[in-house]
Image 1 (cartoon, rainbow, N blue to C red):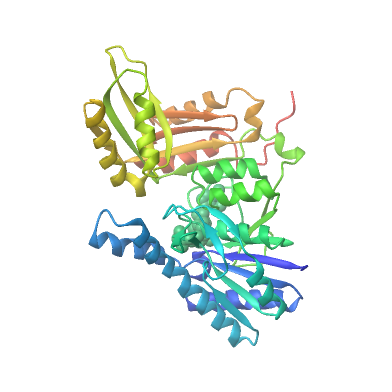
Image 2 (cartoon, helix red, strand yellow):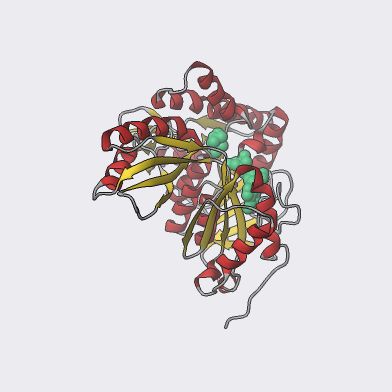
Length: 412
Ligand code: ADP
Ligand code: ASP
Ligand code: MG
């Protein structure tokens, strides 16, 4: 079927019934231009956080299956309301849960991965000339259990649907005009990018630019699905995420990010012997805990501290597991610090330009910001710093790399 457009509306775009009706008008406008519309919707802004908070009032260690049962309800509210708003405008629309449209996932509750999408049902509805509305963020496991795809997961739903429906366009509607050189809420003179490569966007997203969920970029990149990130509050052109183009290669740093969602755990005085690290990270992996940075120094005394960062949502579970590990391997206990932030600079040009790390560390030093951990890849440098210095750090880095200006560096 040709001319299928997938549009995704984030929670900020459907924060109340007024906004839902605005979104309905936009969708109907597209439909009347002759497009087959498939719309993915997030829960009303703030709803998922509220649902998580309700669970916390009951227990610190909720069952992850029940968490998925709980948080998946948010999207069921928004899809049905949006369908009603479209009906009111005189068009046919039908809403579905992830399970109803066959978004099959593995069974990693709260961070499930999509295995495949059965597009038949959606295609049938499109043939009936209906607008199809799909609940974002959720799927169904092979055991018929409801799963969710991790925070921000509606982006993943949208890209997966665009792929399986072979859509001509995948538009991500949000509350900013596109992808910026830094979070525009922090850096007032951040610059909107007209385009960005999958590779850079994946780093920006993984390093905290909340605007897109990293796995959605992974899928888009793998299947070369161009994404258009734009505002649902106006008609301006946004940012196109696509394959690397020549111009991009010349920009050394294209963005600065901050991630305040991580916490640091240290297992103290781990005996320095083969297999210690393997044991620690195997046990954590078996508990479905994703690790980000890891630091282990050489030991002078036969024992060494092993520090790593995890998502704050997994902090309590991680501390509990780390304590068990510490007892088992004869380490000296566990400490944790959730007062951290990770700031990063990202850019494809780093592959071929030296001096980025020095410039970054100098900018942080200039603001008297201490660096706790460092990690690098070909196209990014990240530093863990104190959480209360995060905003200052982002502003200082944005300035040091002159990102408010279009900085094209000549090839050497
Ligand atoms: P949605 O509800 O549409 O999913 P999100 O809140 O998940 O929206 O993401 C949009 C927010 O991401 C913006 O309001 C912005 O503050 C934040 N953001 C962080 N980094 C960036 C960036 N580099 N470019 C654009 N937005 C960013
Ligand atoms: N509602 C979910 C969340 O808040 C998914 C999403 O918005 O994409 O994380
Ligand atoms: Mg989002």
